[in-house]
Length: 481
Figure 1 (tube, rainbow, N blue to C red):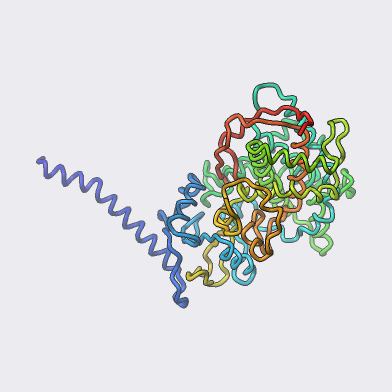
Figure 2: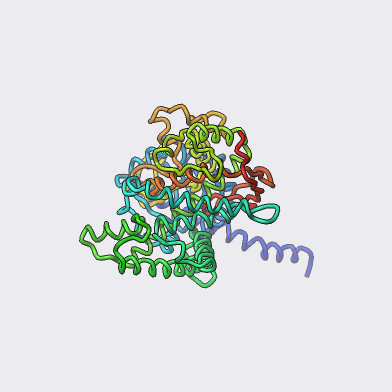
């Protein structure tokens, strides 16, 4: 065979598949764009739709924040993509997010990706209102304080040069969520049983956002197997609640409230729906608070001046005592800790645990010169909206004082959205606010610490966490500020 024939053969071998691939990508793009509403004169947002069927899901799952930052730099505050099996428009910026969140039930409705709906269930916690938590926060305080204090004592007594903060905080927050939200008592789970639940929950979360393909060894398959372990334990707890009407802890947990609300409306208790609701409660009350608490340790470890200002506030309120004289916390004193609250807000601004929220367009809507066709998914970005907010100066600086001066409500309302917004803001935000404030107080008055690897690299998967698990050395706080 001559040289030219070899070249021609090589071209056919490599060029033809490449051309077919490029043609398939182009046809996929045309197919996705054909969803444009011809009755609306506005164009679709800029962007790309990725690979056939897979869209850009794989890049997003593997690269997360890097992928999102690249998209923002290239396409701006609104762009189209294809994620989790659906054509999607990603939206950021206070005004754009305001339009989406205030259009709840009129322009958009909540709809999580198919993999999330399959694992967590298609129902939602709309029957469990934040108001129910607001009136019962005072009952949560002693339980949270007990768990946090015991955990910090273990950290201070731990042998070895360092402790991996993130897995430790996740276990703490899981114990608190199980007690407060689902009513589990400490004696109900052995350490091995608790660890099995923690591992099952982490496996479920890792695979929550995956392609909707339920075949052995796929992400969705592994997520469903882990979910079934959690559901079995929750069902055991629900049946125990049905058998014993009075709560053991002296207060009604969130699951008990949900059961009573269902029965109060004359509805039959549906075991599957209760298990799904309880699992969603754990997701909202465990993973997100663990992420935020880990970020608090990181920021306060890097900014000792801020930690000292927290301690000065505690001292003024009579909360900075020797360990055997520590004052019990209550809602009244927690609400007086304004600077501590600002530290938590600044942490959530720079490192929001959940990067965004999911909606679906109920009808074709117009946004900033573009159309979002009916039936397309809409993701509003929390982290990007914080990054681009005009409300904040020196955005990369950790500065809790920026929240000490009240901002005009209209300008701040959608520039700072760590819990989402609109009619469907995070169900567990009241619980999270109390938990994080108690955690910060107990941490500041009990411990000093050093981040052994310096500033952590954060990753999203799907919750924000430190890649190195935040190795840290804890020592007891001397009481001197």
